[in-house]
Image (cartoon, rainbow, N blue to C red; front, side, top):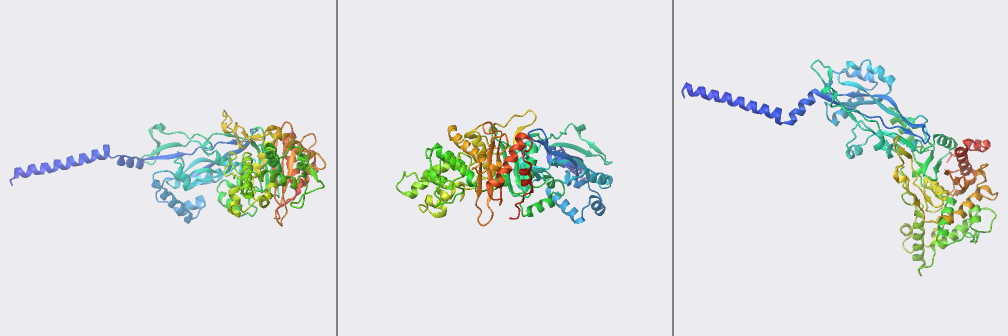
Length: 602
């Protein structure tokens, strides 16, 4: 091959290499987005801005849930250079092992060019000390944030709490990232989407000198938008008083406004200060509460399933009246040969049976509702009658969805044919097997919230609005539509008057079972319950509403191991009513007796 040919071949090879290089460069710069993204990641950083959660107020505008300023210590792993780990750990008061664990979790989350939370919810006083030396540790910087604060320290289970998101939360909602907090229980959970707000983002880059610069002069940034404020139904003053009355006791107080279904007070005792479950001490405090034998985290108001005792006789009366099984004038002998009873009475009408809480009377009433003798087979007849009764009961919100916004609410247990067939077998039980449910005992289980709602139903003469925690969302918001519509029980209003009159006699007449619930100048209508508890002391129950002809408040009180309903639950109930209606207490001795009582030994 001559020199001329070799020259052309060499030129061709050089040109070919240049063409290939240019094509590849064009492909990298103009076609391959992954290279573009990689280049951006090297120079440009992004910090997600967390919004403050919305505030929560009580019904009178007092702050129930607030925010307080804290700082989050952030890290961009790719920006860390020659870190003195020991000095850094001493600065932020952690161990080297803790540092390794935190960084491992951050690397597992991915995105070494992104800002990650290294340590959250640092108090301003602690951050002031840290920030003086933070410039010595490249890749780390502080970011203002907020955490919850409960100014009055009341209603922990009504308010709920916030905690770190779970993996399930991360998988189900793209809004969250691993450093986020989410509502856990109560209002915080029920209204999480309203309270959490909208995140913002800030882009920046560092030039060759390490100086932080805005990207596009901040035009690509977006501000975080705070969550919406909520106006709750709670009355803080009444709530504080209820918690005071339930000190050294186990049980519950639920107070409702009958006309609206708004929850005025929600006391589950023993309780705790919700401020224990915020900040960096939250984990340790939570474990102490979990291990507490008194179970302060247990929401007795909506998760506690209790036998209602004799307050159930109000439901029985109304269902029997509506279906024609009794009349107000119906008299039934107090036959104690099958079931026991209290007090000197022998032959009551319906009013007297309620006033004296006559067990044999209501055993017979329930028998008439179950044994209707429509079928020749007595077992099938009882099963059909029981299910018919159960359908009537469920219209009161027992054993069914009450429609409340409180998370984790249980529906209770109203046994029917299916339930007893599982226990005894089909056609192997009759009314004589199950009659204890006639007086609120046996397998019947309801929550204190359902008890309070029963008092509201009677006060309203046959309807209720689902109990709820929030009046409105935002300053210009209105009531949620689901809490404007009445739910009817199917019992005509005319049947309620005899029951209401009898409930007034329970309190006002000397032979009634709730004389300790009297309030001067206020007509209180109530019903006691004394729930059997085996070899242990009975549980004390009382439901009531007042005033009789213009009901403003309905209250259920359940005190575990306290004995008769008239002795303890009734006076507690009356104190709540008087406090709400009069903002004062007329009988300091009654109040002192309750405040000094303790029933925690069981």
